[in-house]
Amino acid sequence: MKKKIQQKYDFLIPYFEKHIPVAEPELQYTNSYELLVAVVLSAQCTDKRVNMVTPALFQHYPSPFDLAKASVEDIYEHIKSVSYPNNKAKHLKGLAEALVERFNGVVPDNMEELQMLPGVGRKTANVILAVIFDKPAFAVDTHVFRVANRIGIVENADTPLKVEQQLTEGFPDELIPKAHHWLILHGRYVCLARKPKCEECGLTGICEYFKGR
Image 1 (tube, rainbow, N blue to C red):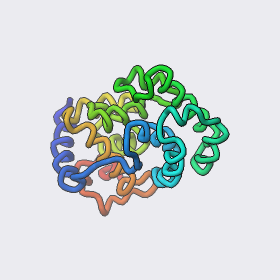
Image 2: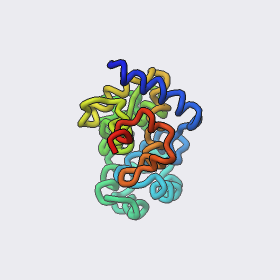
Image 3: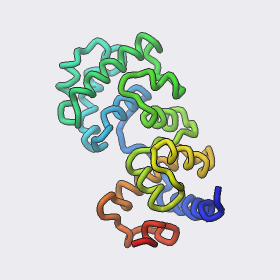
Image 4: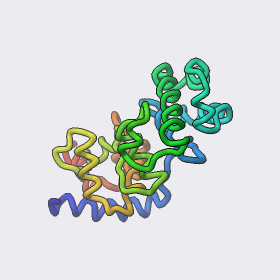
């Protein structure tokens, strides 16, 4: 890693440790099954909206076994206010059936098996690996992609996979599950897509976007 980029990490890590000491998902869940469902629902949808939908959904379907027995139509009725509810209802039905049939209702703890589940791509799998299993897996959503590129802690990273690989190299393994949420929260509340709040940001001294304004 280039010295300049390493210096950015050396500044950024203590900054986030101080300003966001508790970095956790804003999705509400009580177990791995609930988080998996919530993350699938959160694709191109706000966590706030997902959190409005999931309590009733989990009350009706408290386990993968219950969800697997539900019809796509019934699942749709519970999630129709989220984005792309038709596709997500089908994904949740298939996901629950796969969990029951292949994994006896237990959420897998590795990338390969997680991606066998309908509706679960690399990003969703990384969230589960990091949050539930505390593995050094870096999920790259739009916030992470934007913040990492703007600050310049990644280089020539024009795909989520390239960003993931470089962030995984840049952050110590033990911090990766937390760092994922640092970048998400920073992107959600400070480094906004259209109008970043640079005047409120403590990272302007190392930020390539700010220097180029």
